[in-house]
Length: 268
Image: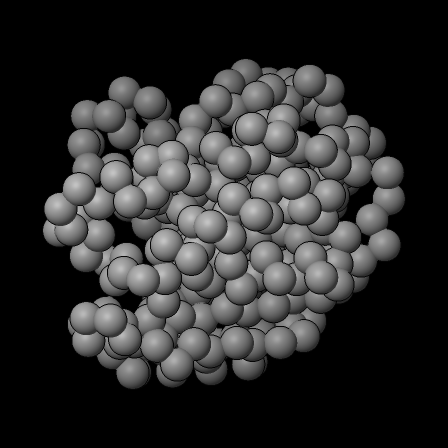
């Protein structure tokens, strides 16, 4: 399968040092120049609670980095208020009105120079799935091997328009619920999980579950081609013991493989 139009959506907020690393790594991917990139930056103050979650200096610094990037950015969208990742993702999903395929990033992932190339290969091989090239420690030396990931977390991935059309109704229902609360104080709301369909307030868990229902399971490779920014990666689990039990603290030191330049496809 070949996708005629591909968009890249990057969700960011108030971490300029992270944003710069993400954009710099994507600039090194040759295929990035053939993708229309969209940046979605969150705002400072939540309109429901009035709570502020950043300072203007940080948000402005991110904007300056984006505007000075060499990545072919088609549009930069700055939210006037703090709406959190689930609503930012919903805005990014509207790219399917124009694009056949969209690849999504949050602002804490550094990728290898062939990352976009390999992600597009995966998408063309498995357009009815979701695929990523990171998140786990290396599981061997088979560069070509993929397997299904059963976990619910979902930070970076590709999704086709066809898959989104199958989940749009349910994810929109979730969006209509989530936009009514301040996402950042969700755990302080009594019985919060009873409000939601699945029941969960976490956007990546919800997205994973609605995709799984339509057969769009997540694929990931034996060998990582990207690494997290930060001490514990993209997210520091509440329980450090859980993080270590899963081996998530064992970040691969090498995400560049010369064989990736010639890799033609993956195998499940």
